[in-house]
Image (cartoon, rainbow, N blue to C red):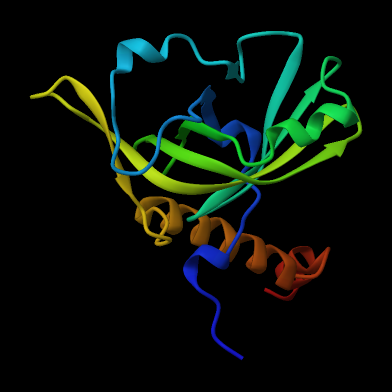
Length: 179
C-alpha cells in the first residue's frame, strides 16, 4: 500500500474562511493557453451574485475541490450537463496573515444530482497568472502536483480536525479540574 500523496488530503473549509468563490465557463481553455482577462466578463457563478442559487465549497485539496450548487433551476436531469466541463475558478481564502487568492483552471470529474441542486468534483489542471508585460492571463499546467500554498492550508485544516477529534468531549474540563 502506498503512502497518501498531499493531494489526497481533503479538508472542509469553514464558510467564514471562504472570502470569494467565482466560476467562469472555460471549456475552450487548456493548460498552456493564454487568455484575455477582459474577454472573461462577469463570472457565470459567483457566491454573492444571485439569490437564484447558492455556491458552497464542500471540501478542498491541493489538487481539487468539491462544490455544491443549490438552485431551483438545476434539476436532476441537468446535473449530467456539467460532466467534463472546464471552469476558471477564482478562490480567495483567509489564511494566517494574508488572504490566499488563486485563479485555477478546473475540470469537472464528477457531477451528480443532489437535493436542490448539483454536486461537482473538480480537478485543478492549471494555475492562472496575470502577466503584466503581455497584459494577458497565462495558464501554467499543474501536471497533477496541485497548488503548494493550498496544500499547506489543507494540511493545517486536516491536522486541526484530527486534533479536535482526539480530545473526548468534556475532556478539557476534566483536565482543568486536575490542576
